[in-house]
Length: 313
Image (cartoon, rainbow, N blue to C red; front, side, top):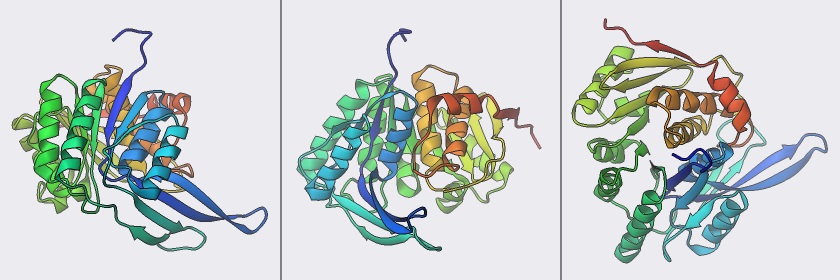
């Protein structure tokens, strides 16, 4: 990669959500209302942009709320590409009290078969124009079957563009059997999907090695406060970040994914890219705002992430 060329990341975001949050201005004791481009794909994209990557987001931004989400994404320096139909989901949170802040979720409008074809073409071209492609998932039915995302992963990877997938459930199983660069999952997702028998280090490593043996280049397993596990054909490692007080735990995994993707776009070795991702995820929990951070702080914090080889039991 030319030293003077910025890194480029394509984020495939099947479920962008307009996020409306109600908080309290403690200085004036009055409500505050904040609007953000939300959903997993946009949180990954926002962190990648914070790390100074040029980011294109491919996703359905239809309807009134989708148009607002797209406008907010562009105001944060993201390029948005969207099929003409589908999307428009909304998430409303009230964070003034304790407990679950989620008040209401309006599911997106699913894509029809023509919009699915358009979405595939938009995502494929965006990925081939980028240094790295990130595949993210969806919580609601958006009309895109798992084998469609697996086909996209296969076609992008076969072109030589590294694919980083942050998925769970059926999507993770489908895409994880393709020869992509990285599959990132949490320990809970590994167990719930049936890939791992339990969440022990040995159990997670065994499951990861089985996937790697089928052609997947690497698996990164996030484990909340516990060290992250990285497994490739060359071995396994744990990544341990310094302890950080948590302000908001949400978004840590998405920030980690963004850091890994940007690291690979910079042509860092996989473990070093994962190290950058671990730093991005750890610092994000110390902030208000999902997928946010500062490049200099994240890169300096990455130097404090310890990497230890996983020995055989």
